[in-house]
Image 1 (tube, rainbow, N blue to C red):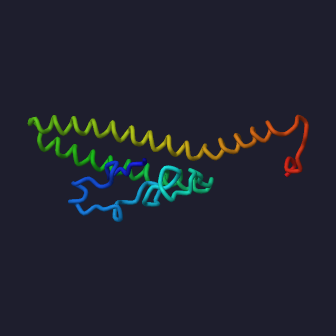
Image 2: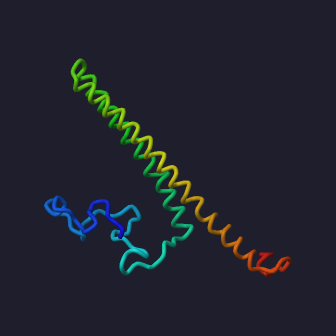
Image 3: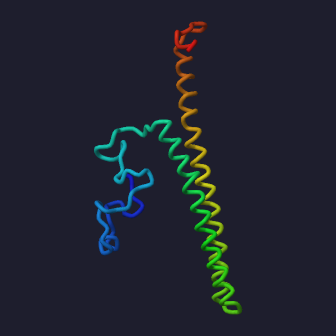
Amino acid sequence: MLQDLDHGPDGPTGMEMAAGHTDANVATRLNGTGAPSGPVAPGGPGDFASTPAEKTAAANTIETELEPNTKKASEHADEATSAAVSGFQGWETAAGLKKVADTWDKQVKVLLGRLASEKSALRGASGLFVRNDIGLRDQFRPIGAQSKLDHL
């Protein structure tokens, strides 16, 4: 069973219920559709298909929104943390803030790497499917046979 990031495997946790979260008002998922769908969700379409245009749009969203906004948020947090470290200079709090900032920077670097990887995978997925389809077609076509589609 798919598990929503904001829920446990059996629905909202007690803390989420106390905060007013229900299945009806949980934040939209990354795919923008709300509730899960697909072969593991009741009522789903039964496949994971998406069009090349949808993959391109998702890759473009990563490139034009998620990556730049993640970098911007990271820089903002770095500036604020640096100011706080300076303000607490000589206290243990400054060392703690510095350690947190270093951890944050590592996490941001990993996140940006993952976003870049997902973007690349989305852009390459359509080509993989096309090459797979052509390979399968070639396996079923007699050697030397030509199709009317070959010259289009």
